[in-house]
Image 1 (tube, rainbow, N blue to C red):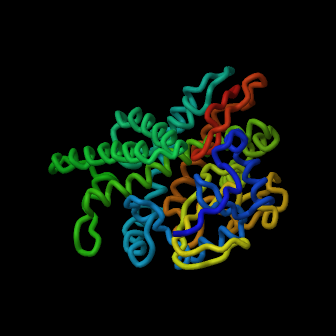
Image 2 (image 1 turned 135 degrees about the vertical axis):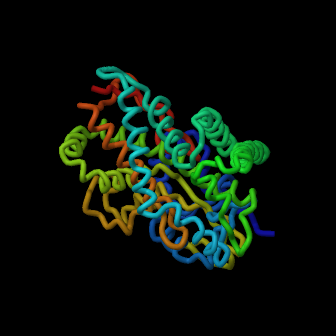
Image 3 (image 1 turned 45 degrees about the vertical axis):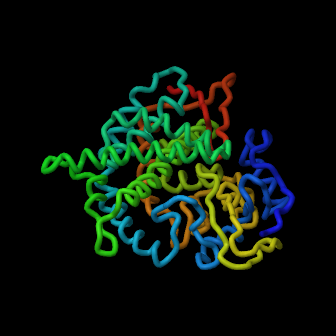
Length: 384
């Protein structure tokens, strides 16, 4: 038994939920390693987060009660599954997906009202994330609406800390994927040659992947894709709407978009946190942990650390990309980073190409999203 410390903060307090970025900035200065009943130990400083990411021996990724392939694994198990997954995100495969991604983005942009107001999150950002995920995986468009509802239920259950609800939501998603696998098994020679079908043919340790393993892989890809791509599209568009000079600069020179996107998402993270567990006694930020302590790495704070970035709100295109933890670092760096960068570049290229100006609506302020999500729950803009 470990003594349970007194909470240093409440991640679900209204103050935190109203402005997560400001709350994490405050914690980074006030209590850089903090305990809460909800997130256990939260790590806010860039140096401490980087230390955890680089030391996968002391800080294990096996922090979930459920199978998580490969995110929730350590070497050597992680190494084998990672080798299986990385070929799905090669430069060649990502580039091959660009035409489909661009068609989806352009189609959604042309549906935006010219010279009118639009609530961007529901009508554009979330729709883009759903459509590109289904396109990449080879799923029918009929999956869009069930996935949309599932994402919302998953968010609500996580925020509530309701384990039973979280398990039920996970089981529901498992059913989606198992049905898609059954359809492909029954298709015989007419089976589509897509990502989902290829996963059915994969082998690990000279045996086929189990359905449980495939479901876990797909769940990891889908949760990350739908949540972060949608949040990112909203964050990027809102930032350009509030920085018209940068918006004009990127319209004139879209080659700056890749670096600009990474920098904007450093300033306002689309992903809040990730978990680890200690494998042995260790000290971080003056706090001592026994083996088995549960940590939450607060990306949204680490990427704004003044010790690394100076003024965290200063937009700069000349920063060292190795310091930006948008996609993590170390052996667990996001395997789909190249795909995500492509999708975000393409959607912003299409949005800027097919519009003349994007601006906030003065009497319709954005509604902030709440943990575990980031970005905006609603974002009303004027599109010209």
